[in-house]
Amino acid sequence: MFTGIIEEVATVHHLEKENDNLHLTIKANFTSELKIDQSVAHNGVCLTVVEINNDLFKVTAIKETLDKTNLGNLKVGDSVNLERGMILGERLDGHLVQGHVDQTGICIEKTSQNGSHIFTFKYDENLGNVTIEKGSITVNGVSLTVVNSKDDRFSVAIIPYTLEHTTFNQLKVNNRVNLEFDVIGKYAKRLYKL
Image 1 (tube, rainbow, N blue to C red):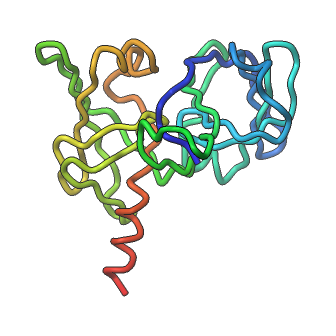
Image 2 (tube, rainbow, N blue to C red):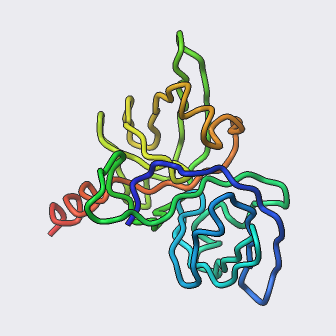
């Protein structure tokens, strides 16, 4: 489990295809604190650490992960939002995040509004995911609150701190993002259908 509070924006150091898998080597400041078999969220995608070498660590994304996320679009030198798994008994500063991306979306608009930044994302509503006004959403691993909910799109307001300390400062219109919808909302919707 994660909180959606990004610990570090790290750099993709190396990418290696092996059959349908993609091995990602990430350069991060907290690598020395990691251990093999530990979970780390990469742009909101929970991946297992399989190798550590000085300030570099390696994870593997399988075809299922690559098909449902934006990790396959990464290039060497790109930045990724990182978060280690939450520690039970600590404050939950974001919201409950599983690290299981539901689908991707596209940034369709970004505007500045007197100190905050509004980002609007469009997603395929036919996949059955929903947002609600003031509900939670995770975009590329960042825990956010929905400020404008429509059937196939939503907006979020980003404070300057979040803009500066995540990859939102590099996000452009037409960029593809990973979306994890509110876990409680997903279960409520499923129960409602029964």
